[in-house]
View 1 (cartoon, one colour):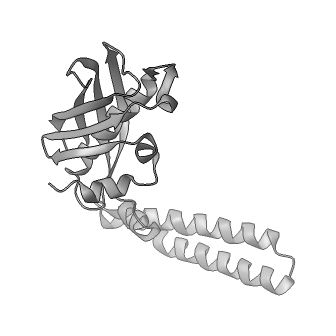
View 2 (tube, one colour; view 1 turned 180 degrees about the vertical axis):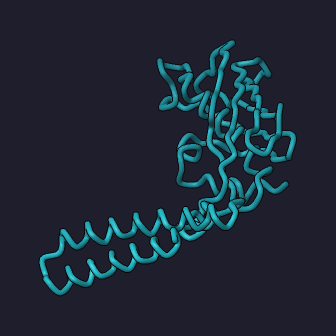
View 3 (cartoon, helix red, strand yellow; view 1 turned 180 degrees about the horizontal axis):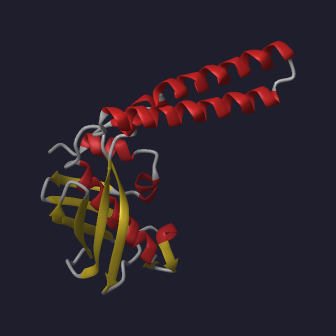
Length: 200
């Protein structure tokens, strides 16, 4: 797969700030490199462990993203890192990230971070949560009624109508203009009438 679109998605964000460069991108292997700069170090000459973890975390998220359905997103749910050696300033680290589990709700990835000589610097195992697309307010409300029978739907709608009446009454209590207050109270009465109709 062409890495350019994914690299462009990282531009302007933390991975780009770190200098992460994608090398290859496939459903079962994500490879990237990063040069250890002084400002990524925790002590002179040694890469900060958090920077190593962020490097690997990005690859797990990238790998997950190419398996997602349209509109879905991802976030890291859990991450475990074992460190084996240092990332030395001035060298380029290579990370190879492979899936251990590709699921509909979670995906698990394992990343080997390697020195320029191929020595294991760290092994990171992370779980990515799959995030469903955000629903509009209308879709969320419609979802409340899914799978319910007629009587359940009527009872739920009556509850919502009564909640709406309470909101109208609250707005009316805040209103300073008498005409506006009366219009809002009339709205509350309509909501209550609708609830009674459904409950009758």
